[in-house]
Image (cartoon, rainbow, N blue to C red; front, side, top):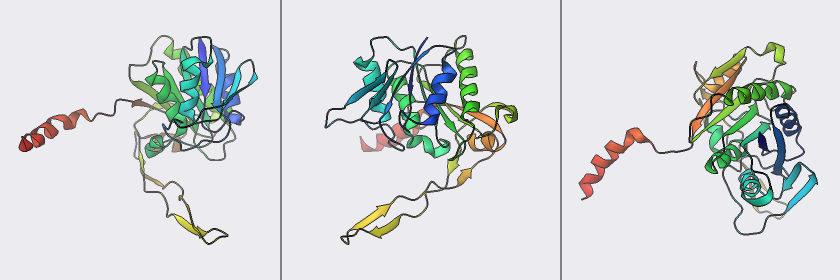
Length: 249
């Protein structure tokens, strides 16, 4: 199995090195990742300038672009070999609840699925993680199971792992996305020239962290595995929308 390894923290991040090693016993990984931190770039693509790619070793490339750029370029012509799947991470910090809307880590996996490859995104449950190896072992377990039970079409797995030694991990849980409160207030600071400058506030604290959510699983010591469907159509709303639109005819 040939595995494309991407992330949004950059090709030199400790998490991506652990991920590469974790999947090496299952397949042949090739890293194609941003040349710098690209957190919260979501699904953005670079469309108005060319994108530089640098090869650092036979199986490591850095891209002057976003995580989605990396997957597009890797699968669209950079790599001579055909990749079998995409694994994105291990992210330095969680991607739970509303985080998935902004996450470059999740976006790389979604881009892989758009391009026809099974895909996983994996993140640590803390912003100062010490136990990337635990997440690496979880990914290895999931990949082994996917060999006999492939993912459904239009689906990726979003994995979040508590920052604990493997011996303290309680297990794996299938979860739904929780939710966060709105991000904290924007901070306004003047530049040295007196121009208005703004900092986006940190992510809000969890709002829905009830049993069954990714927040609850990770807080309880379990790895959270959430299936994400990349078709965003709200099918249950179709009939009501159709009835409403009839008033305009």
